[in-house]
Image (cartoon, rainbow, N blue to C red; front, side):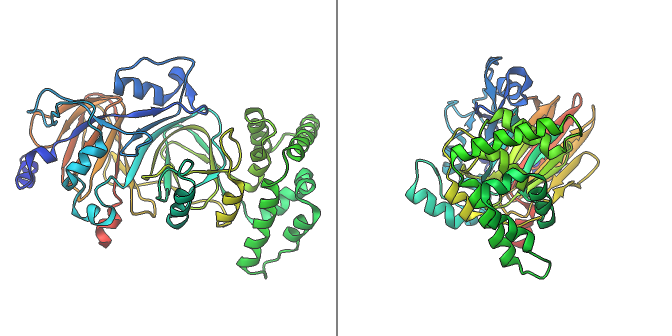
Length: 441
């Protein structure tokens, strides 16, 4: 580790130390409950708290967003590579604001004195709302005119990396698939009208993209804008039909999913709209990224999630929360086709990197067998590490190192080289600014 010490000798020693973080947990109703939730188990270890077996534990937030802030944890020993700060109540946001050099010069130039990404762990017990996240231009407008609903002016591209089997709805199915849906789900035509349905059937390969987008926007908007009474009637009719048909045939995967969603959110328009969206099944280690203005809903499973620092969500189904149907239907891109699934790129025998097409973030997954080590070279931006399983030793500015265990969350300033050695099988995830951003700038 001698080279690490040399590489850091020109930095202010107090500003480069790793920071242990105490992180916020969100108890949204869709979260897994009690000890079934990875979020609950990690949060209990992170904050030395008890797990309520009846309570949903949906998300851990690791970052600077005011809706779920992280705080620096006081450590009495200044000689072990961790900075003692005198009070546990100092937020990471305030500390970064006072010490912007921990972000690195290029990050400050691009995003100012704040962390550009928000890191999360999600435990999804039932479906989240059908939603989309606005681009920067729309986010500014929504925040200006409805700040109580849209808390910031930033966009929110995001990526979900499966820890367990993970299900989601994401993006619109292809035109050919939509024609099959309209043939096989007569209740949709009854809901939107034969005129819209026929427009879909009339589209051919010779029609340009703008016409396809216009037709899809029209039928989806009519669907999402239908009256509550009409939606209730149609869903009841669909449920009865599928129940009868299930006596004579095996229901399709999408039909089974729609019935599952109906049990979770009875008489909700999101149940029908799920037919329009791709059903994505991620294996552990696969990732899905979602750009601005793309419809999606997480269905079940546990994942690591990273996004630009924002909490802007436009919802229009599968939720008891405020739904903004007009905004959602007008903002969507209506791109069709199955989303790209990231398998990650191996950086070595134990580290895999996931690079979405967004400047704000990337995610590394480190799986260390007992007694093995992994290096995280110094990078020009900040990183956050979360230990999801096992224990080990983390080294940064000196040879002593420090024990890390499940539930630990650590902030690493820019230009900090990290080495990790496992004491048992160890699983740790890192979020940082996208390395392609530094190569391009």
